[in-house]
Amino acid sequence: MLDFYNIDSLLTEDERAVRDSVRRFVDERVLPIIGKAYVEGRFPKELVPEMAELGVFGANLPEEYGCAGLNNVAYGLIMQELERGDSGVRSFASVQGALAMYPIYAFGSDEQKTKHLPPMAKGEVIGCFGLTEPDYGSNPSGMITMAKEQKDGTWVLNGSKMWITNGSAANIAVVWAKTNGDPSDKSIRGFVVPTNSKGFKAKDQKGKLSLRASDTSELVFQDVELPADAILPKSGGLKSPLMCLTQARYGISWGAIGAAMACFEEAVEYAKNRVMFDRPIGGFQIQQVRIADMLTEIVKAQLVSLHLGRMKDDGTFTPQQVSLAKRNNVSIATDIAREARRLLGANGILAEYSAMRHMANLESVYTYEGTHDVHSLILGQAVTGLNAFK
Amino acid sequence: MKIAVCIKRTPDSESRFRIAASSTAIDETGLKFDIDDFASYAVEVALQLNEKQGPGEVVVYAVGPDAVQETLRKAMSMGVDRAVQLKTDSVPYDGLAVAKALAAELAGGGYDLVLFGKHAFDTSSGVVGTATAELLGIACVTAATKLDIANGKGTARRELEGAAETVEFSLPAAVTIDEGIARPRYPSLKGIMAAKKKPLETKPAQLGDVRITVKALQLPPDRPAGRIIGEGAAAVPELIRLLQTEAKVL
Image (tube, rainbow over all chains, first blue to last red; front, side, top):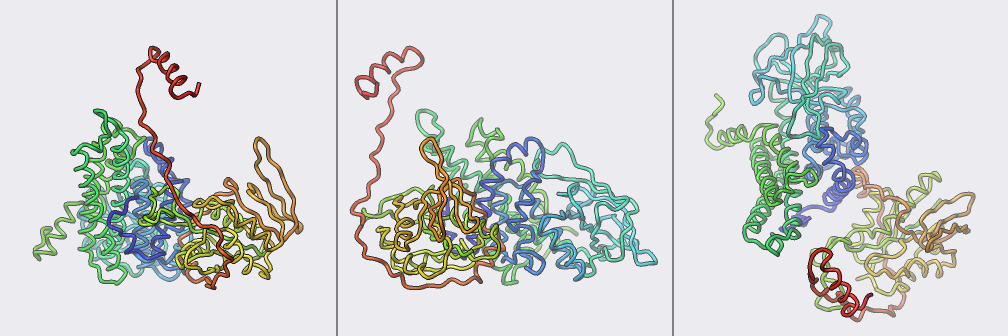
């Protein structure tokens, strides 16, 4: 893997060791099977026990819950390597760690943390995150899913969620709902919902042309009765799920680099070997411009995410800085995947190569966890102080 | 059971190598170093034996400058209990000199088994394992593709040309490990964090006299460019003629 700017020298020995271990796993376990899984539209769930053994789930959460206790840069490097394999595989790990384990860690009681986090780190319990609804994507504050507290302190949940990664494979869903009939987003609370609860239905969303090696589901809750301790006691208001998204978006900013690196490496290899007009196409200026552009954007993205990770570890980063990294890195990765696909000519449309798979995947990554456009508006507001949403 | 594994830090075999200006070594700029592949099989075998045999200790040794500490920690991140660096400014080419340093350290260590890679990727000499065994005065089995310990005795399988043999040996013993014996485990992320807290001892290496040094290192000559004689069956007679008269291989 080309390290043109010697960014390795900015990483510690353990950060490099973590990256190298996950890199080898992806090379040996993910890359040989992922093209076929993608074509079949199947999440390769046989990888879950090995990913758990490696320790990728919630890797930046503390050791007392069975997690690896890594810093955020090491965590980001894991996401980079997983997405070098496939965005669907990285999405699985992001959802399990940043969107299901993190809210339990951040907003859960000690009992909830001790009960849920260790089996989730081991991959024995799979989690998903239910925030987006069919009519409320970029505008989650409008959600209509509602939980009502009963006289005995238990809850009844009604509503539906959409575009839920891991939804049908999950054992528990972290569901965000308004409470007790209050339509304001201040009433939003998080609930840990066992997916075998009566009235809980998960349905696979079919016909995806992107993230095909990932399960995406619709969740329906019809009078789902939840015990009193299903609520995440420290969650409160829309801010809580948004904090989870900040965690996940941080990881995505790294993941997108991985997809871009895979496309770049593939394009360079192809350009050096593919002969047209009696010489390797890499010798033509038009391909060299493509390659130079890809390389430049990858290096810039690496530096952005690395510095963001250092700020996250120092506790000084802001959600707006995460927006910048997610927006930039996914956008450049999307462009790099498309240019790599073009450089590969007709071969570029085959599943045997990775460029078109990444290109299609990245359209989802561009859209989820805050669309590119929403992040533009977040940055616009951060700079001007003027809110485009209102 | 107490097992020692002697490992070497070598460049990634998939690197593009250049010869250094001295023309007696490779240019290490930009090269990525890691535990040698054969040594990593030896570490895996030691860990598996230890898991099978019950509580014991696996200790990893390396001769070299401080850069080998990273490689020793890698072995500890796989599950090795502790590490010893036998410090030198550089790793001598002369395997016997290295073996003397290892034997001086291992003697009296109480090891039942001392494992090595069959040879290291960078020198392909295969001297250190056998020489260390000789210096320690213990049995030595080379290029094992299977290794078991039971009832105080070891058995190992070795691949021969067109056959395989199984040998039995007494303990303590040294065994050098061939590929195919076991797939080295991924250092788990928790293992990587735990390795930082495991003991890594640094001692001066008691190297023997260095009696062999590299005089010159050369890349193979460039292959001459290929030539297309023609296409299809019509080209065959000319191809045969050239293979007979020019290449002289027929």
